[in-house]
Length: 564
Image 1 (cartoon, rainbow, N blue to C red):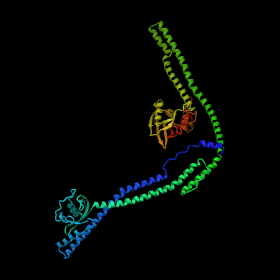
Image 2 (image 1 turned 60 degrees about the vertical axis):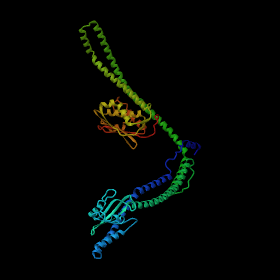
Image 3 (image 1 turned 45 degrees about the horizontal axis):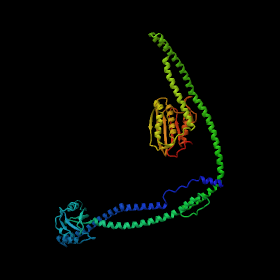
Image 4 (image 1 turned 30 degrees about the horizontal axis):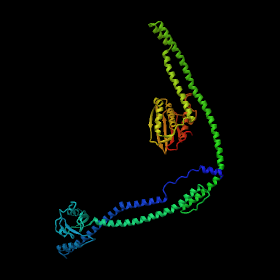
């Protein structure tokens, strides 16, 4: 590459962008932290309650099996009494003594009461033996022994929850007992488990689980950090190599690390080689580009000259027509004013000489003869036509100024719905007489544009829509946003267009109106404005089926240069 080309490349090189985003190691540590939080929440809110329910179910099953063992003791002694080995009274005594001695765990025991609520045997509180417990309540007011009897009476066995103090403790705790009816002797045999025992077991399990979890998470965190460092180090080297390529395309990097990173290194080496080969011919490309640019400027100048010729012809034609009928109307007005002057002079002379009723009659006849009333009426109409002609001249000049970009306007962020309302107000005189306006506005983002130019586009389309209505019709204005594109449609129920008219509708100086009624520049200017704002304008129509103009503008784009 030549020294001149290298200097030009250096001057055109953009400033290096600062890297954004989060480093890989931080991302992986964040994932690790999230996993720690998820595991901790899972243990606290899922596993611990699950273990609690599991332990409670196991304990309930356990005390049921224990009651079965005590029940089998009573059954054994009952059968032996039936066989004559013991008397029934001796069998009961022996059975109670055997059940009283039965223990399990640290504080587990069995008791026996009858169906009337009398305590038959309690190994921990012997003072209750023989006592009527039918009206006895626990610390919540529950009739405990009544409920034992009711459960056995209904189902023969069952579970009952209540509050009862642990052995050696005065404060009551939650307890669940299982009771079973021994029908031959009318006994209710039961045992229970305290929730404090379950909580102690759960606390021990929770502690062990927490320790295991912490060890696992520490291992996971260390492993994650090592993996992140192993990935980040070669990636950082690749990033540094990419930065150095901006200044020297001849350097190379040694492929290393994981398979994907080696592939990336090889791809970077290949790309730098191809860029180096490409830059060798940059000077020739610059020369060719300069030649093409000069040729393009020449073609543009030629096209501008052609456009200026068409513009001058159209301007002369369009301005001469209104100027012609304005001149004709003013000539007619001059003749009318002469007659009025003659009539006024006659009145002045005749009334001064005669001053009689006959004078008044003659004055009236003269007024009718000269058609003074009609002259006055026509004078007003001619004045209105003259004003319309002058207004048309103003519009033609404004269109020509817009075509030559003399009134580009200021760029700003615009609410398209508000711009449409402003355009509707400007065109209200045309719309009100011929159409019912229907608004269907959507929620839109702002559009960066020249509001005066965009407003002119809307006014032009609205006026055309009104003029396309041969009788009272409807104009529908609708807005919506689709994939960051703001869309505006203006539909009328007018006469529509044939395919040939649709094909040429945006050509300069083309008009479907009568000669002298339009410049043919309105839609061309509208099309030019929308395209220079990075948008598009399309039309759908068919004869006698109305027309729909759809304008699309980007919702977010850099500010356009008004002088472009």
